[in-house]
Structures are given as C-alpha cells and as structure tokens.
Length: 508
Image (tube, rainbow, N blue to C red):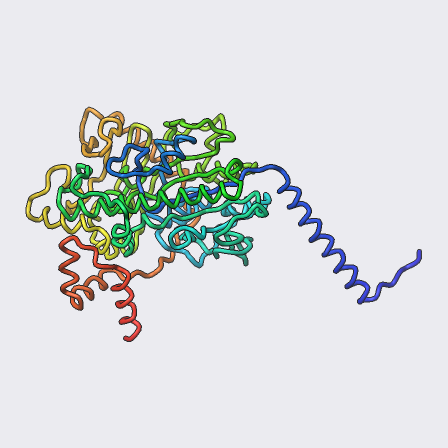
C-alpha cells in the first residue's frame, strides 16, 4: 500500500479549508432554519406593576395602547410571578424554571456563580433555533436593557455556561434581516426612581390625587394620594412606550408576524406589593397579541405562572420545552395549572423565608420567619415608600383601621388564608377561622408537595453588599432636614444620597 506523506503546510491548508467549510455549513444550517417562517417575538416587561391598567378595571388611569392590545389579543386575569422581587422573579423567567430550584432565589446573589449545568437561559435555546436575540429598544426609557438575574451572565455574547455567559446577540434594534428575532424590552419608568416627579411635571394630564380610589389597606392621606397619582402617571407614560413599539413594528412591516407579550416583572412598588406574597406582590398583568393565530378580545382565567410564559415563548419558536423547566406551554392542549408556587427570601439586608400557593380562588401564605415584620425598615424602601412613613406614624398614634394595621404589626402571622373571589384585597385572614380548617389543611399539604419538588440545587449563596441601616443612620445625621422631609412622606432622592454615602465610605 502506498503511503502519502503530507507536509505540515499542506495539512494546515487542508485543516483551514475544512474549518471554513464547517463554518459555511453552520451558517447555511442557520440560514435554512431562518427560512422557515417563524414568528418574531417581543417580550415587554413593565417593572414593579400589578394589574393596575385600565383594561383590568383600574380606575383613574388611561392606557389606550394596552387596551387596544388586549382588544386585539388575549388578556389573562390569573397570572402570577414566582417571587415578588425583581431579580429572583427575572431569574425564574430567564430559565423557565422556579428560582428556588436553580438557587437564584436570594435577591442579587450569586452574580459570579455559573448556573448548574442542567439549566440554560431560554435565549440560548432561541439562538440555537436561528433566532436573533435583542436586548432593549432605542425608544424607551434607559433603552430597556435591564437583565438583573442571579447567576453569572453578560448582556451580549455567546453562551456555553462554562466560559461564555452572553444572554443576547445585540442591543436595541430589530430589522427584517434579523428575522426571526426575539426582543426583550424592559419598561423601567414604573420602577421607583428619581424620575417620577419629572414624569408627572411633563405630563399633559397628570392624574388628580383628589379623585383617586385608593385600596382599603392604604390610609387616606394627601401624601399617599399624591404618591398613588405619580404611580399612575408612570403607567400612562409606559403605555405610550408600548404604543411606540407597535408603531415601529408597523413602520417596518413586521406587525403581522410578530407576537407581542406584555407583563409586569413583579407587583407594584408600595405597601403589600413588591416584596410581599400578597396578591398585589405576585399577580401581574399578562396580555398576548398575535392576531395571525389568536382571536382578539379573549379573556382567560387560567392560572398561569411567569415561568409558563417562558415555556410558551420556547414553544412559539418551535422548540421542545426542556424537562428542567417548571414552566409549561400555555397553548398546549394539555396545559392545566392549579397553583402557582411563590417564594420570598433575601431582599437586600432583610433575610426572610415565606412560601405561598395561589389559585384562581385561594391564596395561602406560610411565613417561616414570622418574627420578621412586614415593615422591616429596609433602607432602600425608606426612600421609596412615602405611604410607609405616613402610616407608620399613624400606627404609633392609633389612627389606622383594622384593614391598615396588619402591615405595621411587630410580627407576621404564621399562616394566612384568603378567599380571593370574596376578598380580593385580602383583608380577612381565614387561617384561624375553624370554618375553613379543611381548606387550610388541604393547602398545607399542597404547599409541602411544592416544597419537596422544588428544592435548590445548592444552598450556598453570595449576596451583593447593600448600604443597609448604616446608610439610614448616616443620612439622618448628615442630612437632618431631608430626613425629616422623608419621614413626612416626601421622596427626597435615593440615588444622590446613596452615591454620597458610598463616596464617603471610600474615603475611610
């Protein structure tokens, strides 16, 4: 047999050609995938917002673009996040798996720790299926680029979970050449921020605080009314941003083949909202628009977890939903969820452990650390909850009614049980009512099943440091007048004071 000797230089040439052919083949495969007519998908995520839209019956607010989206799409009335705080909730949605299971349930922790190898961000699945993944949009506040997840990641780049941790391909723009594309756009204006006053000042029709309808667990006070009006002003601004996204789709001729999903990332930024397992912390707006496939004007009462939305996006892209996902595709004929399992753990300097299950009718909350009060005087919230300061003072003076007092009691109840159909504001805790002992016993067993099924892959976590109570003490001592204003229910500006505090610490 004749042996052929190949020189090193020829070998390198052959290897280079083979690599180029392999790359071209890969490009061809991706190109072929893209030729299949797959829908574009846009996921709009409004920050810190409960179902406080006109289309959900919220008084005093106007949301014409979201009204139109619901009229031409599907509105879901029983959608819930799995955690009422931004980073754990977003972590669950980014993987399609409950945050407790992936050990991403402690707020802003494990930012340098890679995901357990069994899990992948859903954007990686979309990339592999030929989608261009886009983070943010050029037309919205802060360009909508927030990610905020509790595992090692980078905004842009490739992902292998070992040495590469990029979640998206590009920033801000989608074009016809990107099709099919997936864009995740954060609508930041509804998040508490130092811009709220400016947004209200620039509004052509700011909401009138005097005509507001407040929830019954909020005290009727001018500062609280003004704060609620400012919140609704942000929602109206956000609705205009939704309108701009739809206009961009229409201008680019992509509206007909684009699914648009609108949700909140967790509940509203007020008492019993963000950070708490009550309904206003967990229940979110969820509207989906895709006239090519779904009849408009539908209202669905299915119980939906935010992780189900992730699984549905994967399903829309023609990808089989991975077995590690706790979310299920909503439009699968076998979709049937009875409960959403909610969890509250670390939030800044406040350690906590509470669990909840929520159905269309019942909400059960188990507080494993009842000694930690609802009003834990968390430093960040001191700056961004005017109602807390007003009502804390009223509580000390005995001026709150029975609906308003529970948030300010020195401890939490060990268990809470609410009938959501009869008591949507969750004013009457039935956990100690003997007439509901059978329901209570049933829900106790249901939550134990979730506890067992959704156990973390690791119990080790590394939280990011936060200013905490030393910051509040510094603020009181160094800015006494601003501190008094804050105690009187005025938002004095968290960012400028926290920045000054951090600079002061660096000098030491």
